[in-house]
Image (cartoon, rainbow, N blue to C red; front, side):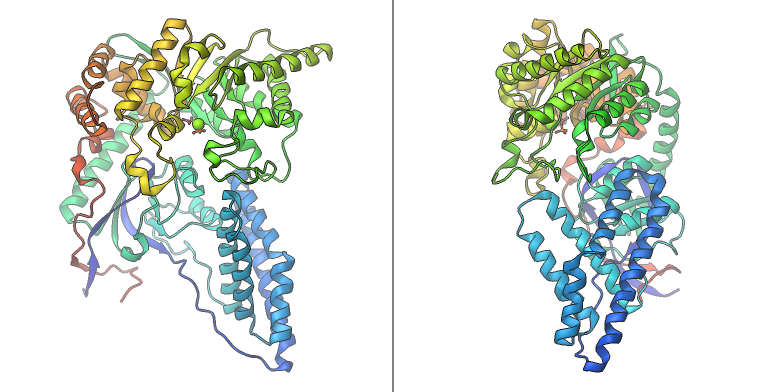
Length: 620
Ligand code: PEP
Ligand code: MG
């Protein structure tokens, strides 16, 4: 045994996929490779050009191999690798590098590094989320080429011990391919967000994951013992043995309970005092519809159709959209599918729908506003939806509505399309439920007026919180202020549910708050009986509903509605949940909710502690 000093630390990030992973860290080293600088003689130039071309073709081949391995893993992974291959064929990259080798006699690595830097500068100067994402692709492609030139191995998971926790600054689509083939216990990255590639993959593989962990690669190396709590976004590095033991117990209870939840997931969600709650699923692609149903959803409560328009080479036409909507309706039958009209713009960009000169795009030409400005987009979608309505119970929902005139304008487009299709002899359902999302405070405040125009509301809490509290939902600097249980939110939510009740229309909730265990007593207490959430939240929320008494939840809402801060509301909810659920079957799934919240966001201890070196340790 030799002794090394390792840091003991708790780091915090965003828990993007729930559950616990405990194991040795496997560090995917994406630290920049050192680039040698050399001036060549004239006679060395042809060989250097060959060496560069050779590296290009090896890189192409590697990506083709990965694409073959990834074929079954979903189109979005595949398309990113396509983009990487296109970058390898880019003239600026190839000609620029060859020119520097030929004219300035730089070695290939140096020439390539210079060209990569100038390509990245071009991306940096474009104020566009889509292009900023492409910048990290330039890094991945550049890194692959440089490693091939230097004869260095690509960062790999090949020698990873089963059950290890993958730790990386960022994970590339190539790493994704490997994670699909290995038995990783979970993963943690330094960057990323709830909707990053890594997060989506973690949820679909049901592996615990935490992203956006500041300082991760500074503190963690291969061989460190690591515990990740994907439900609460915590990463414990080299914890005390007693803490590891505590987490092992949590993990065992969690896994056992999860397996049990899975067996009960198809039963209806009826509260202990007999209130039935309709739980549906949120999806981003039609392929997820059978997955949410499999997790116990009674149909789809939100299909974010804009994802059909992202990462694409061409816009989906009417026929393609129609087929995709039918796919969702078929998977939901006999339950309904709520399909949302396009919510492009803001942070959801497509390379076909470029909106110039918006300094504040989230408040700009987004969603229904964009659809009314570009009616051809809405018209194609309306025709596809109307045609699909012949195949099953369809509900159409419009996002980001803030005024009555928007609803009327969208309805006019649907009415015109219906007349057109009727004239063409196309079959359609006579009646399609037509609803709107309530996700702008103005809409909440005029909910009664809006209710006269529609069949249902669905509350989009992700945006409603962002716009009500003036807290950008993706900005880590103000993430601590993003509070679903802020008193202002409770007030707006009451306004919406009261308006729905008074006007006799269905009110559902499809923002993340609907699937958040901590918010559930408030959501039920406000009278909501239609919820829509991600697949992985469904079994837990359904079981929690079976263990809660809605009339007690109503009393809880009454007790907290006038409290001055979200912290005080949360404290009361925590107390309520502890009283209601400790000792019940769901306790292991939510016990972290009962932890002392004052610990959140703090480092607890990072003094060095001696630990035994592990055999697959890469440090000396
Ligand atoms: C919301 O805003 O809560 C919502 C469901 O819409 P999205 O997350 O797609 O903006
Ligand atoms: Mg929204």
